[in-house]
Length: 252
Length: 142
Picture: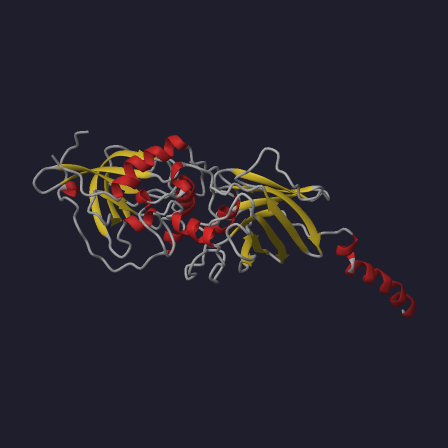
């Protein structure tokens, strides 16, 4: 028995250090979360006051959302979503619709039900590029690497016409946003740190968003198609959105 | 569309103040932010005849011809959720409402008095006097 225990010790040691030897957590699956953050003052990403530069504050004020503390009737706002533009990466992440991680050997592919968009997180060791050849992109260009059990993702090349969330939080084309993804049992935790000197005087970090892995048999367990086509958006705006914000129709 | 008069379609915007309704979780899921256009703490019951059921993104919509007490007809629009959300939450399909159906629908009315209302989730609806069929009950697709 004593010899057996001696033999088992190295084995247990190796198992404990397995992540350090290339075995990374598997993030694959369909995930979803509640939107939450109703009580925040400025952004769905953070309970803190955001450190705007003058340009950042100006952009924030210029964005007129239909939701959140500064909400106004969408017919009188300028939400890019109202013209069937893509929501963009971070607005999609904070919104709460289901999405899926597909983890492969050299990349993690993230598929979003909302808009039926996707992005690739390259985990093949490449550097974050200095130049995004065909960008900017609504869903950015992402490179990830593992720090222990956490996937650290750096995203650049974003299209600053998108909003960071539903409340009109801005970012610029030159933002570098770091994401930290960590699996905890059947949940996945995310924080983002926004580095955007044009709009923010210092980097700021979000609170932790928690996504739940969805059972394949559950209501959110399978992604469906939800595409916002201009043909539908225009009809919705003219027949529903704008009339809802206008005066009574003249019965004559 | 010309519709026959029925007892169920005899009132114009029949108003039933059932209860005060605080902002529900459905507001957070209205991605286009149109919830602010409606009185979220107020409900009315709209009764009319279906002229069109628009089962489309970004939000589905139901259109009813509603007849007032003085015989005038107004086409009332009801904003619903997207097809994906309605199928998941209520089990509705593109066949749930058909032209000619007599519908009673509890909605948040427009803040401006326009003939537009909204109900995104957990809607109280009767179609020809019956609750709508749901795929969630049968666990079958449409």
